[in-house]
Image (cartoon, rainbow, N blue to C red; front, side):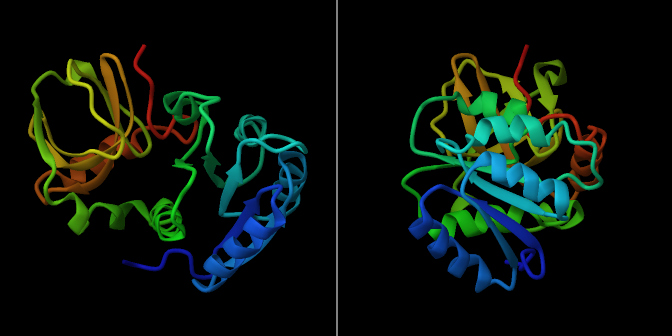
Length: 227
């Protein structure tokens, strides 16, 4: 796995100091520059003043919750807005809604720090390098074929599609969408629809996948909800 965290600036936002300290140790070990905030309001001021590459924020915090921070940071008129990963152990928000609001990733509590590290690393990996290698954990992906591209909406990190099948979160899927082929991971699922982050694109589909994702502007959600 490439270390895309090296020398990147990461803002860790959580009202629990002990948890933040552990996270600092984890990301400091990857060579990242670490900033901290105890709530969404403080985090917003940090982002306004400093160039931040990635924000990892809890949702429930008394000094400004993570969702309000996400909504505000996506409207900031600043160069190179940071990517935002949200963390929560509560079902206050539907995961699909969080992606629609602009989140680049979601981590449910309780979590393993290794999984958080992997997602953060992937979030900051350049687009041209993201889809070259298949993670070993996804090799047994279920094969799903869709011939109707009108049933699919692409976002900045993957696609959403109508499906009569309900998939559990984190289910690996080997997709074939009108001969665009690759492997993805289910990030959200609801009745009649599923959101899939693309992890790997087959060599013959790689340029097309990158083109589909690059065609979306920075204001388009990472994974789009189906209307």
